[in-house]
Every structure is written in C-alpha cells, then in structure tokens.
Image (cartoon, rainbow, N blue to C red; front, side, top):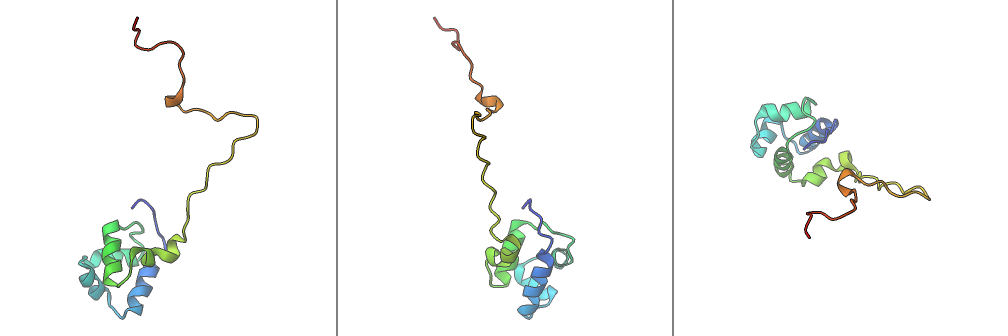
Amino acid sequence: MGKKFPQIGARLRQLRVDAGLTQPELAARAGLHLGTMTKIEYGDNQDPQLSTLYALAGALGLSVAELLGPLVQNKAPAPPPDPIPGTRPRRGRGDKRRGGRRGGGS
C-alpha cells in the first residue's frame, strides 16, 4: 500500500474480539496464513497489502473503509499554496520555452 498504519493492529484486534473470533478463526475466514494476521495485530506489519485488507474486512463483514476508518480520517492532501503577489509561477524543466524554429525546415 505504501502508507503505514501504526494502529492497524490494535484496530484489527478490537474488531476481531468484537466479532467473537480467535486469530486462527479470522485467518481461516480471510484465507490468510495465521502468521500474516498475527504480524499485523502485533504491529510487525504496519503496511499490509491491499488484498490482505480486503480479505480481513470481508471476513469481518466490513468494507476496507470501515476497517481503516478511524485510522485514515479523510486526510486529503493540502492544496498548493497561492503564489506570492507580483511573482510568476516557476516552470519545471519540461516547461521551458525555447525561441526559434525546431526541426530546421525551410
């Protein structure tokens, strides 16, 4: 996934206990190795694969959004800052304007 969720283990454990399931039962329902689930619960894996999250959420009768809900809290990226008045935006390397003709055709 690329994003770490340090609290995913505690969240998963709470949801599992609330569902009345043991680790082996949830792992079996999700079609996962017990070791995979244990590593997530104990915090050894804070960046589980998306397919793993889907499997665990489905086994708990939840969506991935419900599984991660309190951990994500709709953290949208901040918008870019407004330009400073009186300045022009900088151009990236690929945006340089070149004068003259290209291709040399006459």
